[in-house]
Image (cartoon, rainbow, N blue to C red):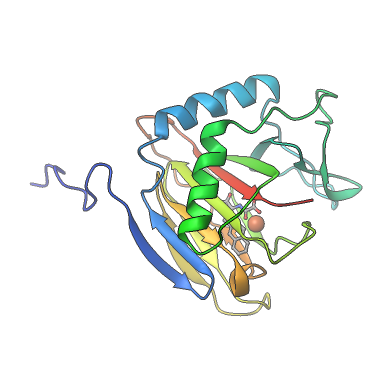
Length: 217
Ligand code: MD3
Ligand code: FE
């Protein structure tokens, strides 16, 4: 019988795993701040509710999204872009919570990117079945700046490809508290997320939430 008294990771420990040139996983590094992060996400979502954006091709995205910080990523029938105003509320996006900024800046520094100043945080919420098709992040001004992602809640299988869509994919499981820094030669690699499996997470419930920090402008 497995009583699951030890899940392989000490309670508030973290581990660095290189995922390839420029890509570093900081396993569990958001676990210390998890309650502050969750209450900050709730605050953001109260002012700027999660919504399913429409792709330029006219499809409703299965991932629900909102943003905080000076710039927010938006998609509609006219295209993808960063915008200072939330098109749903007509107001600026909520401020980036201090706890978010501290985590992202610290993770970037740990991965070799000191002086990181993200101005956009996209919050992706996955329900069971939700996925993100293979894509590149190309809507930012400076590909020299890294992207920091924080995974919370249910685990997901992340697909990490190459610089061409047809390059082979590596599957990486990302779990609650994992932080990944994607910079340098990893910055323009294709990536995606496989359909989320059903489950229950004690803090987040039946969802996966991903915070994606970028220097967009
Ligand atoms: C690898 N989000 O919002 S974050 C996205 O888990 C996005 O919600 C995923 O891809 C998610 O655009 C993945 C990790 C990520 C972000 C940007 C990358 C991985 C990346 C850019 C280059 C390579
Ligand atoms: Fe992406």
